[in-house]
Amino acid sequence: MTRYFFNRYYFLTRTLARAFLYGIVILSLSSLAFTACARQEEQGKKPDRVSSRAAAQEPELSKATAGLSTAIEHVARQAIPAVVYIEVTKRQEVSTPLLPFENNPFFRRFFGVPEAPQKFKRELRGLGTGMIMDSQGHILTNNHVVGGATEIEVLLASGERCPATVVGTDPKTDLAVIQISVKKGLSHVTFGDSDKVEVGQWVVAIGHPRGLDQTVTQGIISAKHRTGIMDPSTYQDYLQTDAAINPGNSGGPLLNLQGEVIGVNAAIASQSGGFEGIGFAIPSKMALYIAGQLIDHGKVERGWLGVSIQDLSPQLADKFGVESEKGALIAEVMKSGPAEKAGMKRGDIVIAYGGKDIANAGALRNEVATSPIGEEAKVTVLRKGKKVELAVTIGKLGDRAKLLSASVKERLGAELKPVATPEEAQKYGVGSPQGVEIAWLNPKGPLGQVGFEVGDILLEINHRPIEDFESFVGLVSALQPHQKIVILALDHRSGNTGYVEVEVR
Image (cartoon, rainbow, N blue to C red; front, side, top):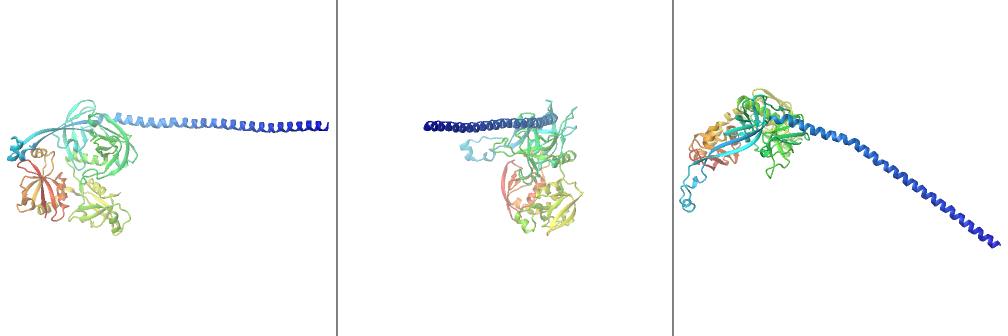
């Protein structure tokens, strides 16, 4: 019996113990299940909060996108009527390519060179864009669009075609102004301040790329104050943009989102010849000044200091004891020029002009060029580490040529004059009034000794084009004594062009 009760007691105790343990396990599992469910419920609520936050942001993004889209639409609607398509015809009389071999017996025998006239006429056609500036029908465009044109036809946004005449061109900035007869209700653009443009600002380009009229593209300002894009002797201060610009866009407006013109589309950097995201526009400040000069005078009268300037390299900055490389170093001061009269000296570093900081030589040259002639300008220079304030009366760039003409005559043994009119340019078969003509020649001088004659035209010096008499004087004055140069010249008798090596005095 004792064993029986013991066995029953043992069995009951074990059963109760197991039940107790099972209860604990069940409670634990229930607790875990409850916790997991609670966590799942909490996690299930979080996406709702995130979704709510995203849903709140979506309208804001939509409004911003809609605002940008609406702004571009507004700019396009406002500016397109004032943007025109320009078709250009250039007729030239050029020398026959086979003329040099016409009297060569070898070529006549083996190649059958036919007799041909010394010159033949050819016709070239081009296209570009322009913008109507005012109610008088003045249109701003690029020089490379209309320079040397025989005929110009303008297609208005309304579809009407109008003949145009050239008011003036400026190769140094690649700008030109043409004019059409005034039409009723002629729309025109509004100009903004390019100095206030910031990198990253949204812009809109309008033009006629590849003949596709009224094309609108958008982008941002990628950079400012780009130089060295074209000929280094020209006045450059480009705005860079990634708004699509292609051949045919030249001369069209680059606008801000207020519909104001802040630049004139002028060039692209491209290996393919088409848009690659790097376009350049002439700032509106420079364009307005040049356009005003062309409308008022038919040419550009630029300011002049009478100095040779250069950028500060790290080595030069160290040599002159300055920490910054900003500024323009005066390399030479011309005798009797405005700078000498004001007390400027070689080795001075111009750090401010007219109250504006000067970053480099190009910035100083551009500021001086657009300064009113005859007015006084405040100039700050660093001289031996100390600031010196000077007042310079701005001279006329044309005076520079007069001062240097005697030097040119001595160095080349000749007197030269500009090819001044389109008629003269057409007579000699050059694309536009460019180059200089020999007016007097010393037979024993550098040009006379190599066979030049009165009437011959010089077109290039060391592969640098001679755009006008001023640029010619500048190129010659920069040459070293007894330096050998290569001149591209046009023979006034035959009309042929060729390269001739000359040693200057």
